[in-house]
Image (cartoon, rainbow, N blue to C red; front, side, top):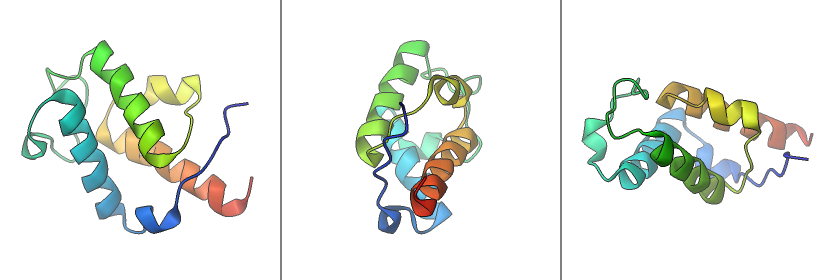
Length: 98
């Protein structure tokens, strides 16, 4: 039901590129400079990362990468590393054709 996967693997070739792109999207969504977002930023360390901004970020990520997150993914994506892990999971699923 929630497995629409349209990630272009060319967009996600390098983990660093993916992390940088997600950081840019977070900064734009949270109305802040991306340099303020560390590699391990999470909801507790970022005052701008409110529940409203979290939902907005999820929509931005889904639109950017052409995917839909399951509810359990949405609730676990509370840090940049967790977001990257979720996106990589979708990339792996897309690559395997599942």
